[in-house]
Length: 344
Image 1: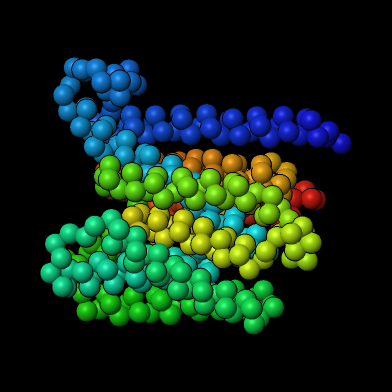
Image 2: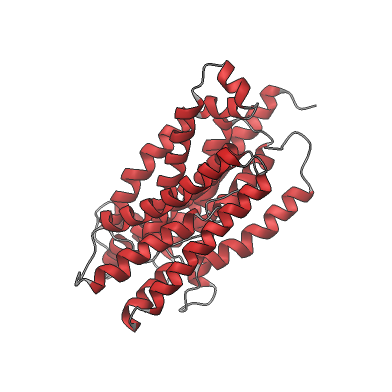
């Protein structure tokens, strides 16, 4: 039987390997594209030195580096949001997309995008998109949480969440039916999910919102561990369940809304990554799981974004397609081969 010391050493080694893989994928993602740029040139540009080709600098600093940084934070936020919801609902198949949170965010972003242009707005501030996505995500989340107080059956609760998602999708379809071709094209491209076109202000906004939420989630590691033993145990440890629920829902919704606002709805990361990390690290301890999920989410999204860009280049595939194609088989494999003691 593996000792506690060896298990911790193995878990730390895995986390370090994932971190190293993120660095490798990020550098490779910045390097390749319609114009390949060597690593020495990348390092020179990042350190402010001149390179032989003047076009390399704008390509890296204005296109590839913001996209790579957004991909890292986006994957981390989506994976962490999925983990928090799985713990909150005590259900391993819950994620923002299944519960309709992403659909709610999509509906309200549709209202902002399509409605904003209808009222003559030529451009929308980042806060406008974020506010719309946040309101949509919170609206669906409130419906699901209210239902959770009335319904004890998890399957019924999931169906309620799915129905809320269908209703949001229906209203989104109605919105698109009244949009003109130019508006519709922009909204459809956004709804397919992509980290392309990220600007530095958007990256700063993404990190400004995401980093505090990640830190707050890590601070809640011990209360989240207490939740795994049931509400009665958590209350006996002095935890105020009412406040704790609000905080967990708020973090998960803000993380989902932030990514959905800028990158569109991206499914499966929030579902697949917590499973992968939980089974790979062999623990349900959130003090280990949260950093693992953050790193693995960043890695998965980085790999999927690179594949979406390169596999049929110059055509770029929707990111959600790649995350589903890669994530689903891995989760099925891990669940079939999982060992005892890895349950949520």
